[in-house]
Every structure is written in structure tokens, then in C-alpha cells.
Length: 189
Length: 279
Image 1: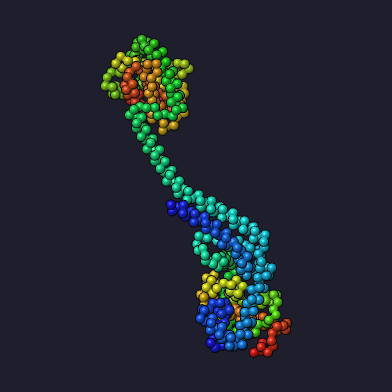
Image 2 (image 1 turned 60 degrees about the vertical axis):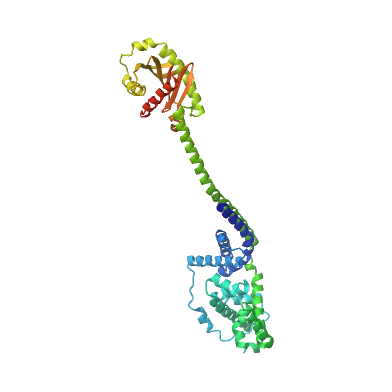
């Protein structure tokens, strides 16, 4: 009967949640840290995301990218959280403004320390950093990033390209300041 | 592929987002261009460096205690949802099942009720039936002791005026006259006590037969309104005893008439008392 079949499907789906979604908690926490920059807020955001995911798990199609689905939920919840806190920042054409400063591509230093990379990443503007983090740290595809951030795929591509350039410039600045890892001839090009 | 073209798609190549055919062109270009190869190697190295740096940074690692607690909360939530969702589909089947049971019960009740009217069978709950039977015995004894033994006394008093004579004439005598189309005479109406039970006793004569109508005014039987619409019939010491309930009061019709006649008298009185608020 329809009622029994419906119940069995729900029961199986909820059991699948444990296998499909729960293993991604460390990845979600890492993204949450990017979004909140605060351990307590990140934990709250992960918890809220997982609870919301349980409620909406019937909408998830088994076999698709569960990590991307969970990350999308997290971004939506974070958007609401920031809106509630009045911390939503609207930046006018950040791509255009920053693109003007990217006249050339600096050479990337070779012997980078973790601290330098972290400091440089923190100096990358928010819009670009989000895309760079999702693509280069979390390994999401352009399509998945577009869905998570709810922006066109072309915007993902341009933000990623420019975000990487900004990061390279930041790293080149560090190298110049502290005099490591950069071929001076190449840097002067 | 030229260096400029490679520069435009190098980010997509780094993210592994190019078509297979384009990948082949990029690969061929990198094979032949040391400058682009060098630049691309730097980009790939940086990407790898970012990944490993943030992958092992302590702040970005989930606290195992938090993770364990959250997993347990989630499991509990899943169990609750499964139980809750399991309950509602059950209701989907319970509601129609209950509706069917209710319909069967209602029709059964109506059927049994109507058959009771035709056959005058005993339909009261067993506890009440037993109670009625016990009082029936007392009432039958009282009929003999009071109505039959003191018959001459009641006959002599039949024309006298007394309290509630008009009431019983209207509620008992007149309806019975209508039912039987013959003369019914009320000899007397009084309260009497027999074996510790007090009754309102109406003594009647129908075609030479003495008929007693007893209303038990000592006790009220614990009966619901729905079950009070039944008339029972039994024989006690060669007498016909029909009984029914009105406002939890037991009412008996006792005579040496035929069972059908006695029941007919009881049914007439049942209808007559139906509109009566209290006895």
C-alpha cells in the first residue's frame, strides 16, 4: 500500500542520512570557520546545518554530491544569520574595482610557510576568498560553487581567477618584505 | 595553442574544468612552452600549498568532543523522526479501521434494538439484568402479597379519591384502555414495602385478571440512557413479569395474562412514561 511504502522510504532515507551526510561534518566545520572565523559560531552553524539537513533530507537525491548539498544549506543559513545580525555587506562591482589592480601576474614564491599562506589568504577580499576556498581547499567544481553561492558560473570563474591573482600578489608582497623564495629577476618582470 | 590562449584558460585547467579535447591542446602547449609550464607549475604548487595548509590548521579541525555530541544528537533526532513518521502512516490505517468498527457497532446496535422491540428479548447489560431479575422476584412476591392477598381491600377502595389517582389514570389506565380496546379498572394506587423494597404500586383489573404495576422507588439502577430503551420479559412463579427502566427506576408489569398481553401492557406504559420527566 502507498502509506507503507512511503513510510519505508522515509525510514531508509533517514538511515541513509547517517551514512551519507554525517561523514562530512569535518568539511562543513572547515567551511563554517571560513564563514564565521569563530570556533563557537562555526560549531553553531554546523549544528544548525545538520539539523536542517535532516528535516530536508527527503529533497536530497541519493548518489548526488551530498557535501555540496550540505554546503549550500550552510551558506543559506549563514546568509540568514548575517542578515539577522545586520552584517550583510553589499559590495558594488568588486570584480571591476579589483581587476584594475591586477595589471600583471606576480611570481609565486616557492618556500612558503603555513603562516604566510594563512596571512595572505586573510587579506584576500571576502568575495574572492570564498570562491578560492571552495575551489582550491574544498575541491568543489565551478557548477557546485555556482549552486552554493547562488551566482552564475561565469561569475565563479572570474572571481576564482581574480581571487587567485590577488592571493599571488599578497604572497609576492610577503616575499618582497621578508626576502624569501622569489627569483628577483622574475618578480621584476 | 598560443601562450595568451593558455593564460586565459589556465585557471580552468588548474580546476580540472576543461573538456578532454581542450585538455589535450593545453597539454601539448605545456610540452612545447617552458615559460607557461613554469608559471603553471607555480600555480599548481600554490593551490596544493593552500589545501595542505588549511587542511592541517588546528583552528579548522573540528573538535572531536563537539563532533561526537552532535552525531549523538543527530542520531536521536533521526530516531524521533522515524518513530514520529512511523506513527502517522499507522493512523492512516487506524482511522478507516475505527470508522468501520464504529459503523458495524452502530448498525449492530440498531439491529439488535429493533429485534428487541419485535421479540422483546433481553438486551440489557448482564449486571443490570441480574439486578432487574432480583427485583422482579421481590415484585412478583409483592404482587401476590399485596395485590392478590388484599384484593378485596383494593376493590372496596376503587371508587375512593386519593393522592395521585388522576396521575395514574392518565398515565396508566387511559393508555392501556387504548391499547387493549377494553375496560381497564384501576383498583388502587399506593406505596408499599415488601422485603425491604419500597414500590409505588398500581393495582389494575383487566378482563378479570389482576395486573400490578410496580415502580421501584428504593434504588436507582446504574444504567446509561442508551440502554434504558429495552423491555425484558420473564416468568416468576407462574406470573408474567415485564420490566423496563425509566430514569434508572425499574418499572414492572406483573400479571397472569399471556406473555404477549403482558408485554403489550409494558410497552404501552413504556411509551406513556417516556414523556414523563421524573417518577
